[in-house]
Structures are given as C-alpha cells and as structure tokens.
Length: 306
Image 1 (spheres, one colour):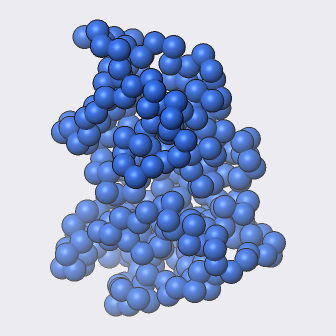
Image 2 (cartoon, rainbow, N blue to C red):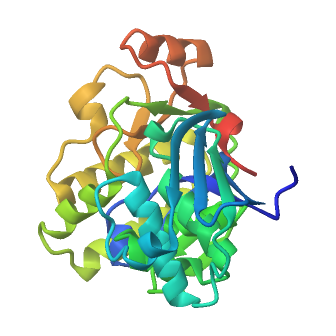
C-alpha cells in the first residue's frame, strides 16, 4: 500500500552547550544518519490506528479516537497519552488538522530508542510537518527542551543553535575536523530522561549571563580548533565548566580516569552518549570500552550526517 504522506526527521547529538542551551547559549549540534520515519495511510475505521516500530519491530500499537485527542490536555503517563497530547496541541495550532480520522499511522525509528538520540523530538517534528505547523511552536507546547533537536531534525549539516522562543537562531556550518578518525561516540547504557533532567536543572542554581557567554565562546572556539590537542583542551574545559554549573564531576574523572585521551558528556549528564578522542587506534579504543562492558560505539564518520 502506498502511503498518502511520508515524513522523516533526523536524530541528533548536542556537542556543546548542554543545559546552558536552555538559557540562550550558542551551542553546536549535529544531525545523525539515524532518524524516524512517519507514514500516513488510508483506513476503513473511524479512529487513528497507530503503530510504532523500533528497527522494524513493533513496540507500540493502539487506536486513538477523536474524543481522546480533544481531551488530551497534558502528557499523561503513557506513550499513547503523549501522542494524543502532541496531536491535541498540533490541532490547537492548526484547527484544520485531522479533519479525517480514518487513517493508519506508522512510525519507525532506525535506532535503539533507549539511546536518547531524539525519538520524541523526531516524532514531534514529523507531526508538525503533517499538521503544517511551526515545529518549534509545537515543541514548546509539549516539551521543556531548547528546541535544538527540532533544528537537527530538519537540517542535514551541523548547526550552531541559539534558543529564541519559537524562532531560534540557526546557523548551518561545516564541521569536519581533520582528526575525525580519532573521534568516537560511546553509549554508557543508562538512558537519561531529558524532560526530568531539564526540570531538575532548572530547579537548581540560577545561571548568569557570564556563564552563558563563556559556553557560547567555547562553542565557537571548538569549531576553530585546528588540531586534536586544541580540541582536547577545549572539550576538557567545557566539561569542567558544565561540571561546576551542575555540581557534578566530569565523566572522565568519575568513570574513566585511566583513559588515554579526552572525553565529553553529551546531553543530560549521567548515562547517554559520550564523545571521546584518542591517539589510540580504533581497535584499542573499542577494546578499552568493551572491557568495561560498553559495546555500543560509533566512529564519528559512521554516524554523523554530512
């Protein structure tokens, strides 16, 4: 069966500016080769028939009535509740959306949803495209994040991102370090809840303008780094700085003090991916983390969309 409509949104990594991106810090974000597809099909029922696939395997299946969408005034507690809420808010932005409910919706992510690469943000962006609404406005209604992930969902190049309500500042850039063969992404195996991490952070100590400007400058300097030594120094400085802001030890200090190279947390600290750079060969880097039970590792050039 041929779909009536088809949408696709990229997954993402936030390389710099975690946490402070919420306060307007200029941050480096990168779209990935992974992403989420959404297809819309005709149906002979009077409800939305929703199927979500994770790497071709169904993990969610449910039906949604028009009344359930109209009554969805918050995120609720289940995945279905969240989908209903997104649809409700999309309809709020565009009352003409979903005049016809006799549809089958199939979504599919081609990455493990536990990796924290943007299964929610790519869904929000796909629904925004379907509803023909501003994706940043929809994101702001259903999420407390900065919106950088929505930007990555729509761009095929690295971006510099600055939060600015429903119209963020986005600068597509080229970021092709000549030592990319020494860069790897390692999954720590403990997916972080982005919404809860943001809430916890925002309820903590206030951030001042100087801190925001410092991270913005680090983002710019990282783009201009000419060699691996300079890159190491900058991501280590970034780690120390964010660690002081959120009162947490950098991941290398806490978990990998014997690693020969530099590393940086990505996104919410504590369990998602880290970025590492090392003069060790690829085989040695993989062996180091394999011996610690960490087997989900990607080389930079294998995962970055460019």
